[in-house]
Image (cartoon, rainbow, N blue to C red; front, side, top):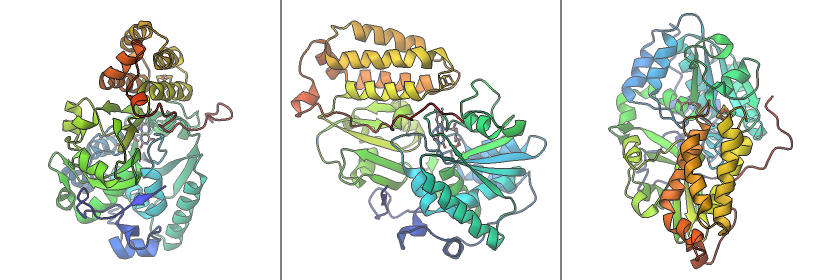
Length: 439
Ligand SMILES: Cc1cc2nc3c(=O)[nH]c(=O)nc-3n(C[C@H](O)[C@H](O)[C@H](O)COP(=O)(O)O)c2cc1C
Ligand code: SF4
């Protein structure tokens, strides 16, 4: 885990979430945190709370992947009758992301402030923080931070820390609802949104931990301050994790609207680049020559068929075979799905197999035709968005790496071979669990 906090052209010195530990290089304790940011502006009046409007005016959007407006979600929960529930999502299911663990390890109080302020604004009587069970140090750090807060009497509500099985889909919001209501950490499929019926059937606000940390700053410094960084259509800063063929992989804080080329420059790409994965395994492959001029805004990336998701950028070396990488990633997604629906049980292993066959170069186009047919059939069929994400990723691989696909089909050397490859196993794949465990 590496945190990069050097002022740079891309962040232009606007470092907010990382500011607490920038000077000391370690986690801010409660005293240091309060000395820097002051006390939480809790109102204690419950909904309707001005904080909901303040967050909406700031233009804060979720940093967990979907980028939904946070103020709208808060309003939806606050408008429901009865006590609500708030949940901080610190699961970080995306294998190429490290930003949530960095934030939680180094600015725990900013996240907990956000959780308390959100609870206060929506009238919550219960607050939960969900963490992955494969990073036990995170739960320890957060329990220690909560201990400090209990002694100082800062929080109006106790926070229950839960550690959940770390699977790609166990961090999806309905999987958290399922788990916190006493079930498995599996997505609930086409159930009502958590804002309507969440944990214990109560209206539930689920926010990514980075979203909560931004919320804690907006509550103190206001929407105009938040909008001073970033782009008019995408205000503020965000944490990104840059990995792959770069000299300085790690977590960086950037302003939204920064060009992808400038963001990548922070991590110093080192070699010839084969492709750029934007948004992680729920994301899109882009041609790096085109991607460098794109600003990190939802609109610009949507126009290019992409999304920054949870802030993941992976630089694929030109010596890696993208088809082999896709076969690995899709096999991992298939194995880590909840296996509850046809597209995950049958579709994902099948397209992983098609990519593997294409990668070997033994198929004379049959695998490609099968793959294209399957991608059409799988889309839109799952109970959750996992198969759709996998299909988008696979389709973007076919369109970005067309030359490699055709080289494989024609038994000609692909780009990876020309660059001394193929290098094997570049994209991170979590180790398979010893046994299937959802409880
Ligand atoms: C398969 C899948 C995995 C997800 N994993 C995460 C995750 O690890 N962390 C996270 O915050 N959101 C994750 N999400 C998004 C959550 O469902 C939810 O939208 C998010 O926690 C809401 O927080 P936000 O509005 O602050 O982004 C995932 C969604 C899907 C479909
Ligand atoms: S689509 Fe896949 S991951 Fe989603 S609920 Fe169905 S089996 Fe589970």
